[in-house]
Amino acid sequence: MEDLKYYTQEGLDALKKELNELESVERPKISQAIAEARDKGDLSENAEYDAAKEAQGLLELKIANLRNLISKARVLDESKIDVTKVLIYSIVTVKNVKTNAVMTYTIVPESESDFKAGKISVTSPLAKSLIGNSKGDTVTMQAPAGAMDFEILEVSR
Image (cartoon, rainbow, N blue to C red; front, top):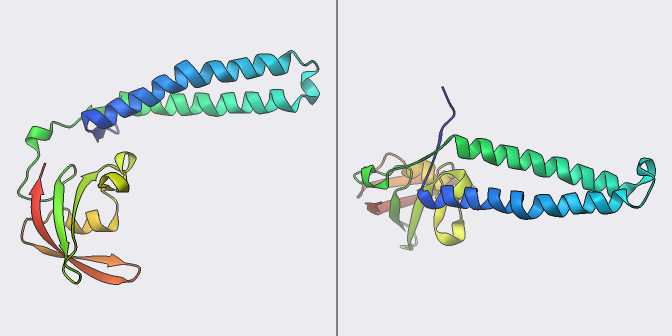
């Protein structure tokens, strides 16, 4: 079976934008650097040439990996997300039981996580403790400082 990865349309568009940037901007830059280094003479002792060729290899590997990721990407139909319990792409509002601090997070794949934007990875300790639970449930997250309890106030998409 294929190793499919699910993304929002926004997440998939970001991957495609990054791939386009690598292919249309970074690749020509490295080709230019290789050409300039080649023009400097003896390639056997040319550190600039070696560095540019290594950068080219790493870039091509990154491009190949991104193409592979995009080819296996599937856009998740957000209208079909179950909002009765916390799942990937759920928007969850939780309250820290001890401090009464209220926070809202979107549960996303690792590749789309951005804590500052309120997007937490499905593999994060908080997301792992929330997945499968419903509004009104209290969950316990194991943190380095000890157990923390959160009450789920709202689940939406």
